[in-house]
Amino acid sequence: MQNLEKFREKIYVCNRTTDGYCLYRCPEYNLKGFESYGARGRMYIARGLLEARLEIDASLVDRISTCLSCGYCTQRCAFDLTEIFETLKGDLVDAGKGLDKYLQLGESIKENHNPYFKRQKDRLAGIEEKIKPTKGAELLYFTGCASAYQYPTIAQSTCMILNELGPNYQILGEEWCCGFPLIRTGQVGLAKEIAEHNLEIIRASEASQVVFSCAACYRTFAKDYPERLGLEVNFKSFHITEFLSREFEKHQPTFKGKLEGKVTYHDPCHLGRHMGIYQQPRDLLRNVPGVDLVEMEENKESARCCGAGGEVVKFGYPEITLALAKKRIEEAEACGAEIIASTCPFCYGNFKDTVKNTGAKLKVQDITEIISQVI
Ligand code: SF4
Ligand code: SF4
Image: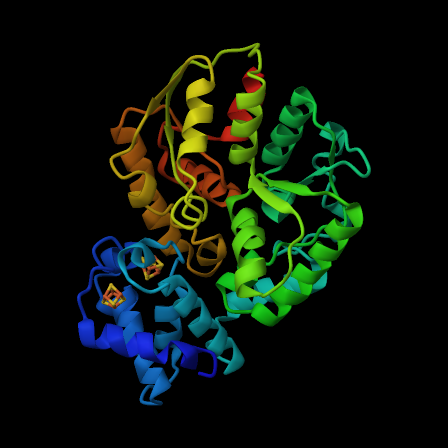
């Protein structure tokens, strides 16, 4: 437990304090009903591993690997628990005990530069018609694997909005996975290699601003690259909702269309709790003609995780994801919404699957899809 060692003191402080503020809203703890699935229990496990009193068996690997990195606990604790648990995942990987499913994601990223076992050369195939890139433009749109391969309507809508608003922008077909699934599952060495590739091609493009339609890519570039991987980032990163809010403030667009209905906004964990962006997505939605924005009971800092856990938990433990997503969909229905909007392709795909599985009468849309319909 080489890397966990640096958190030894914090782990002991937690074990002595045992206040348990972290447990109240932990989705895993509430779902499973066992303390070992919550942050306080995981901190006991961490101590047991540091003191070599615990054997690393399948049940222990599950307790650590199921953590969604949702950040509820970090918000209630004095420590950055997400970082501690992700470091612990890394030490399990180094000990040869990483979860197989997570290691498969790593294999795909190593071979194909995306976690979906798709070909790198097809990265832009779903959006080629919508792109109007300008070589050397100051602005660069980093599509991310999920928007490029799995949910291309998000990348298409982002391009359509940029086309309409008018700033020149670049898209690089050589972009690789940002490394988010690797950092969340403790495969940090490989994450650093691919991050260096991304930084190098962006440096060569001479872009000074990079915009992301994916909450996860945004967190990775803005926070993980400099803070977790120690890399120098020489451009400004913006989530698309930050970027559009700023643009709309400068030049209020003339909307050509109108949307009818009640919309509720789901805060993605990696945009909300992790990056503190709550207001801009709401402002953008309120700006859309015809939108009646309604809030779910749990919103902003308290928003429930959609259950995808940055897509990795969905890949490793689909039954957990489905159970948690169902709760969030029920919450959206309870507030009278007809549309649940988000700004993260993982939440988007997860809600789409859940609506299909449960037969819920709710439309799932990304904010870029909503705006591109009316702009
Ligand atoms: S809130 Fe933090 S210190 Fe308190 S029990 Fe939870 S993890 Fe430990
Ligand atoms: S990050 Fe989320 S799932 Fe993991 S321990 Fe904290 S509250 Fe629970």
